Amino acid sequence: MEDPKREIPAQSRSWYRLDTSAKIYPALESPENTNVFRFSMTLREDVDEALLLEAMNAVRPRFPYFHVHLRTGFFWHYLERNDNPLLLWPETPYPCERLYPVYNNGFLYRVRVYRRRIAVEFSHILTDGSGGMEFLKTLTAQYLMMKGELSAFPDGIINPADTADPREYEDAFMRVLEIEKDRINKIPRQRTLFQPDPVFKMRGKLLPLGAFRIVTGTASVEDLKKIAKKFGLTITELLAALYTEALLHIQFRQQRNPRKYRPVGMEIPVNMRSLYPLPAMGNFSLFVVPRFEPRMITEFSDIGEILKNYMKQHICKEHLLSMSIDNCALGENPFIRHTPVFIKDMVIRYLSQTQGHAQFSGTISNLGAVQLPPEMEAHVEDMAFMLGPPTQTLTSCAVLGYKGEIRINFGRVAKDTPVERHMFRRLVELGAAVRLTSN
Image 1 (tube, rainbow, N blue to C red):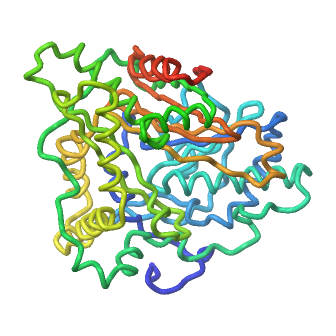
Image 2 (cartoon, rainbow, N blue to C red; image 1 turned 90 degrees about the vertical axis):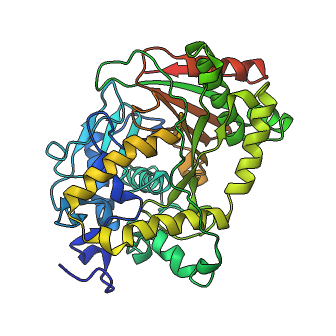
């Protein structure tokens, strides 16, 4: 095995370390917790499957760090180069199904096609939403090039003809600590990983194992901006507040005794690239978890005010750097580094069940507005973003903007839809025109 600290061209590397965030996912992956998320682009014409497979092979050398096996060493999991043939998968009724390496030639992502739609489903072991989106942009642009729809590769999209930048596959969190090395000792240390008391968890009848329902509400950006401005919120804050309001109402119905009310925690991922513009293609996101005490909420504006103040205090370099220091210190601890991997995995699973998932009642991830070059946008009619099955919270929400509209994708493993009904009904009441679709 080569020394990972020595500069080796990406295409020549035989293995890669897991980044700081990715280290937990091999221990948590299961049929219930797939740790898979999905992006898709819908074109204006049916996809030529043979040509798409050619495009997949054409972009493959540009992303060597995505074409890997997950391997298990004595102390750590790691990624090893995978030279197996790529596979193109048909669509199935349920997105974000578990990735079984034995059926997928060992790869940790898969490409699905259905009529005009190209979808890529990634394991979080490989990347986060931003990295996954960049890959899909490149794959779709390459397909359109090979189809003759584009005369040149668009600017602003990763070009398969280029060589991978070593910073794309380094551990971006460790790079942040290097950038901020003069500030690290000045940052107040705080316990940012766990909260002492558990939050409310919605109850409900579950769908059969493997079943996953999606309800998508599409509204105009302008409508949501007007509503958000009315409450002094961003669009992300507005949607997170409505999601929180839904969970509070559900708790009031499911728990009749006010003395037993628990706080509602909302997990909101934060893209660290907005603070540190690194070309990272691995995981480079943290999350904040604002908490809402039911007894302190009398109306929707209370939720919005609490959320707005929380986000202002926590979406800042000092707090997120403190979280990064905590996370990296945990992985670099000498005792932990030299603990066998099977013990690490057991501890991670235990902490995830007893501490990690106990922090939040729901998850909302907003990727923001996706911009494509005009020549490419002319051929891409629609886009979508989905999180994997939320077994711990029963629902989760993924948000993406494209062409002046926002797609609010709720995924659920519960039979009923109380959160979605509340969210979209409230948006309509507040003045948004919402179009609903479902799988």
